[in-house]
Image 1 (cartoon, rainbow, N blue to C red):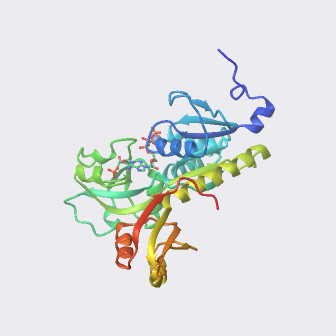
Image 2 (tube, rainbow, N blue to C red; image 1 turned 180 degrees about the horizontal axis):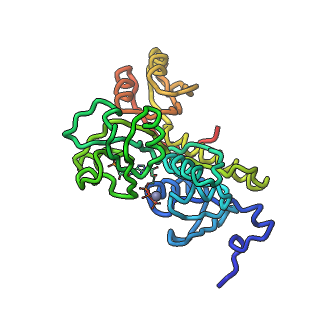
Image 3 (cartoon, rainbow, N blue to C red; image 1 turned 30 degrees about the horizontal axis):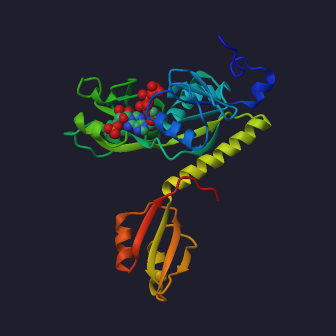
Length: 310
Ligand code: PRT
Ligand code: ZN
């Protein structure tokens, strides 16, 4: 077996290599790995390896279950972690009760992992509000997040803790209602449930241990954050090109979302028309293009942007 610097950390290596915990296999994995690749972090080891070393940067990736990520950061086993806010806050509340460290710093909110924690009841049930849950059994994987909301409303209920298949609990006679993560709502619908109240909304977040990092690691983190932000900004942005009547330029600018300082180029042989190039920092919908066409724009091109550095 070959020796590995990152595993047998010597003092100096430990000070330099940034350790990031990510979800091994689940809903956050593809987006996280895509972001790393786009940021120039290259690692070859397969998902079966617990630890992967980046080839080109002093970064080690630790692949674990998402539930373990907050604890690894809070116990200073890793420097950074990418995890859902739902898991982060639930774990922090659980650890507080257990008397464990709960310190971390939120570095940035990511543009993936969106979901909501919602109460759902059987479709045929009438619903008037959270007070309908008084005295009821509620199945959930997130007892602390649920309790925070219901306690604030003075509602007494019984939590039934389930770590999977929460949506079958009412049909199985285990609970009257559930409180579970929802994305499209299809799972609730196919289990005869309706979403009645959202108690928490969540996205994936990048978190950091609450101690100062060694300077080399902090510098690397700053670079990563700048790259992540550039990729996320580019994901929403589009480069738009069109030919347009000079007289309508102001109207065109008004309907282009988030477009600043367009470049205007005079078209050869046509004094009334110009070429307009602009970066739009918001999604561009078909409706917008149709409006542009009505204003006399032609040859409209909307091009994706890969990277962006302001
Ligand atoms: O194995 P490991 O413990 O790492 O993974 P896990 O099974 O605990 O988590 P995983 O991979 O399912 O989700 C990881 C994180 O993704 C969650 O903690 C959320 O932050 C985020 N996320 C985003 C979601 C969803 N969307 C989501 N829809 N997590 C779970 N779901 C489940 C939900 O529990 C329900 O079963 O998807 C189902 C509902 O989806 P819809 O689209 O039918 O509404
Ligand atoms: Zn999990």
